Structure formats: C-alpha cells, structure tokens
Length: 212
Image (cartoon, rainbow, N blue to C red; front, side, top):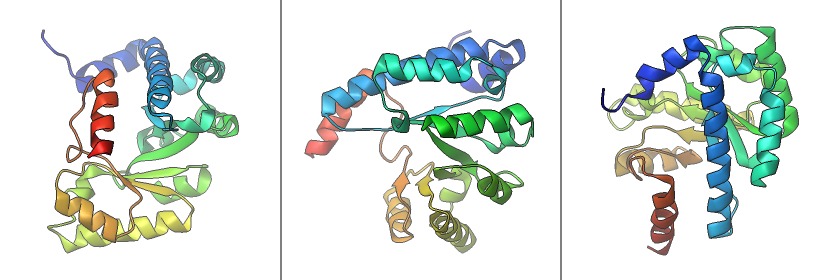
C-alpha cells in the first residue's frame, strides 16, 4: 500500500482501540527524545503530543504518563498535550476528570486548531489551558485578508488577557511571521522553519540554526 497517512490510519485505530497502545508508544518515544534533546543542548524544551478521544477512556492513562515522565527524567511542565475541540465536544465526564488530573499532574494543556469549532470560548473558561494554537486556516490568510488579520489579532489579545501563550500554526512565508510578531503572537510553527524531519536530524538542524 505504500505510505499510509495519519488521516487514513488514525480513524481506524480509534475505532478498533489500537489508538491506546499506539498513543502510549508515541508518548514514550516523544519523552525519550525530549530527554535526549534537552541533554544535547542543555536547555529545557517542551514537547507537544496529541491525545485522542479514545485515550481519555483509558483508566491507566494517568499512571502511564506519570511513569513515562519518571522513566525519561522529564519534568511534567516540559510535556504538553494538544486537545482539539472535537474531544471536548464529546462532553463526557471522564474527559473532564482526565483534564483535571492532567492539570494537577503539572503537564501543559493546549487548545489545538482554535477557531474551527463552535464553543471555543466556553471551553477556555471551563478548562485550565496553558496554550492556545490558532488554526492554520486563519494564519494562511492574514497577509491577504483584513478579516483574517483582525480575527487573529483579536484572538491573540483575548488569549493574552486569559494568561495563555499563543502559537500560530501553518506559518509558511516570512511575511506571515513578521505580521504575527507585530500582532504580539508568542510562537509560530510551520513549513517556513522546516518540513517534518527525523528526530536525530532535528538536533543537528537546531544546532546549525542557532549558530547561524
């Protein structure tokens, strides 16, 4: 079949329950590399990992996260879990409980793909998020459409008033990065910096980027 994209295999993994062991593997790999990355550069970094709706139903999730942090010698606040509105819209009590436990554990929580759902503001009020990530569909048009630029500007101001760090997704050109900086956005991610690369190459890539 060749390469199978996440868009294809993740829904199948969700339906079959395989997303739980896959998710555990991803967390272990992410924390293992984060520890190596921090040691290589002697700096503290934060690693963001997606959590799927099915993982929230796993009663062993919190114990697993806590053990994985200890095994990798990574502090909780160096791990960030990205939560989409799709997860929150399920409205189950076990999701509320899991988010509360994650917050107590000390890991960071980010609202992913902000602006694409229906009740973002109520979720920001209800849950203890640390980071808000503006969806790429808004970022891509900020240099072309005043309406997109105004929405991003308002989102940044609102998030900062709530004490949230703001990340812009999908930055692909210098003009977008410059405008985001002018609007007060805290961080940016996207192909402008680099396309996805293997973990080992990232350490060399960042070392070279820092020197330049």
